[in-house]
Image (cartoon, rainbow over all chains, first blue to last red; front, side, top):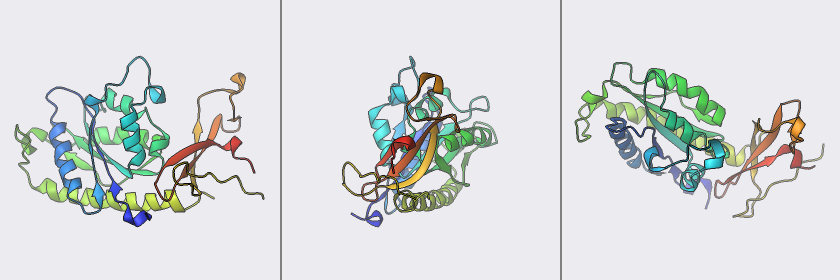
Length: 190
Length: 66
């Protein structure tokens, strides 16, 4: 099978385990939008389900399914709420369990906030972490401001402008994922 | 200059593409960590990816040979 025959694999990571998380609605919405794209496969990864040890950290506590999923991925969508201007500690704990699986792969962030800034502060905080992990971040973000007004209690999207916004976000993520796959597999470092 | 030994994909058997280097800062020269490079303060690791299946493997640069 050649590179072009393989579908891109772009999993969506739901980056919080908190009860009542509105980010779950965002993650499911983005997951469904990714799934609509031709030539793309996706999977929703809920970090609540990973059950990682807190007795240690890093690659010592890898979850085999999560690692295999990231290994297979060409790019990642990370959906993260903004908690006290930062990212959830559990999300960092999860991301730190892999390294080689991320190198030269694309990453896009969807920030979620109850207030009006659409998670911009958490996105800015997360960018240097992703860079150090070896991921290549895109310059489009998903900004979900006032998330309680974007979705109803059942997760139905109330503001259709987000379909267009995520369309642009995914265009960029898919482009970067294709380019980086070609680079990983064909362009030598030196 | 002699070329480094190519890595082969363990699943597909084809030559992998060497596309990145990363420093692993674990270990120290005091512990005589295998592959420790004092110039970088850690172990230089090479990332290689398979063009058929996409698998990525790391190899310590010091083990790459020539």
